[in-house]
Image 1 (tube, rainbow, N blue to C red):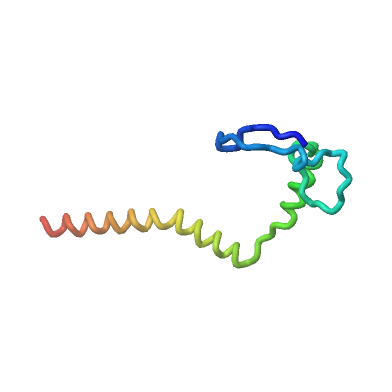
Image 2 (cartoon, one colour):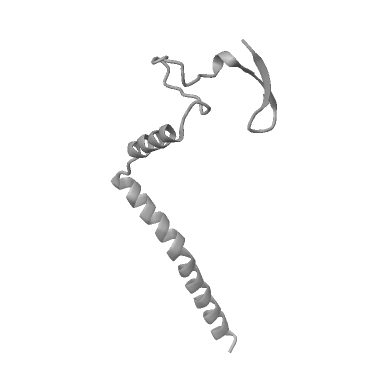
Length: 95
């Protein structure tokens, strides 16, 4: 067992044990976690494809996306029109 110091994602020093790191030569079929060090690019792509295939949208998701897009696009236009109407009404009182 070898302990090494390394920096984590946030720059903090952490201890790393060699026992926790899986190598590609490990034939442990019981663990589903594979280390990023031991994965090839082909294995990473296949894992990403599996994750993408698991994601699917339901009809409720499409309704939520369409409502959000309408709010994003139409709401500023409606607010602009209301402001213009307010300005026109305000100018008509001062004539």
